[in-house]
Picture 1 (cartoon, one colour):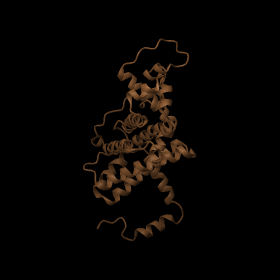
Picture 2 (cartoon, rainbow, N blue to C red):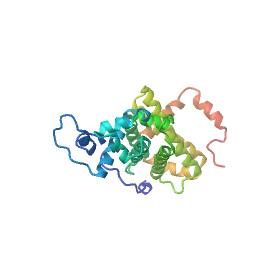
Picture 3 (cartoon, rainbow, N blue to C red):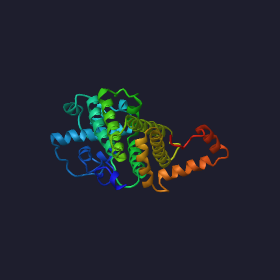
Picture 4 (spheres, rainbow, N blue to C red):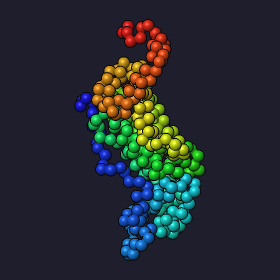
Length: 285
């Protein structure tokens, strides 16, 4: 299946840095905020450095608390700056929140990038691992935004989330490498992205299911949805044969096939399904 590998650039080494890392000691944010025990003299920040430092500190705070619970005073204190200085760079908390969210959106979109080699389900499993890393480390602010319950939500913040969804959609289609994706396939990908968002929000709230189990479930649900779409689209069905040929027996797709085979081994189930399919099932008109 070498011919189906799309020209996707590999990710940089390691996942994108988290909000918390943005303000760690040794960074611009950490140095300006004055990390405990750091006796090194502070240097004066340039205009660009100060702006980046305020964004980094805001990202850190918004990752730990819902945006409505973070004030300009909180941001100023965490940055070791004055309230007027924050207002010098940003007209208010909303502007700082939207800029912080844009940076966060770029990071989240980047987590859908994956070297285009190996079985599709393995690639998606790694992508979902990074996605859950992000959700876990940015929980409260990210959850408030996606649930639409944040007083900081606005057309600007909604546009950022839409951009992330489009980036994820485009990356998944690149991995599928299907010539001229149909409207049905695009809908399948968008529905799966929405499913991933709902699943991650529920996991944040409950934590009753192990993360790796959810990663596996989401990947298998995508493979199942892709298969259902292919049942309605002959051109996609032909591509699907190649996808399954690339898969490993112990990979997410291989495990799904075994689970389905085990399901049909339940006494009476296979016969009931065959009866629903009718006597002409599997024949070519």
